[in-house]
Amino acid sequence: MKRLFQKYKHAWVLLYAFIYFPWFFYLEKTVTRGYSIVQTELDTKIPFIEIFIIPYLFWFAFMVITVMYFFFKDTVEFYRLIAFLVIGMTAFVVISTLWPNGQALRPTHFERDNIFVDMVKHLYNGDTPTNVFPSIHVYNTIACFVAIRTSEHLKNIKWVQVSSAIITVLIILSTMFLKQHSFLDAIGAGIFAIIAYVLVYG
Image (cartoon, rainbow, N blue to C red):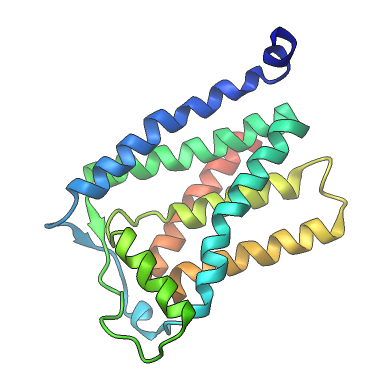
């Protein structure tokens, strides 16, 4: 047990989850009215495409696989990835606390009836249209892609680099095609990702 603890002692940084998730769920329950709407005219021109629920939900697997890979494979890169994630996630909950925000993009009726629409309805029922800026879905996806892109172990494995790039693009697009986030949310996430990149990798 002692040897195991010494080997994986870097797991202590995952304790951040006990700060982030209670804060996040508190905001989800309390930010219900009087929040600022974050969206643009461009968002009304972006179509709703329900099949993008697949990459949207794949985000969870992408996150877990990436974090666990670096946890077991490269401690230094793991710390960098977690630092990148913590910077954005902390900024997100602080912004949402000081400036409650949301969007009104979700369709009130659906033109089609299929399994993907049913999945989107389930998503809407479990996720409020508030606390959207910047998009953590987008930010964390970029963080994982950067970690994969800069990894000494992975940067020369072409199929990993190509597939992670495709996954990243599809996840980012899914946030807008599912009307979960506005274009501004995605841009905001990108700006914060640039700042975090400079701080962590610069």
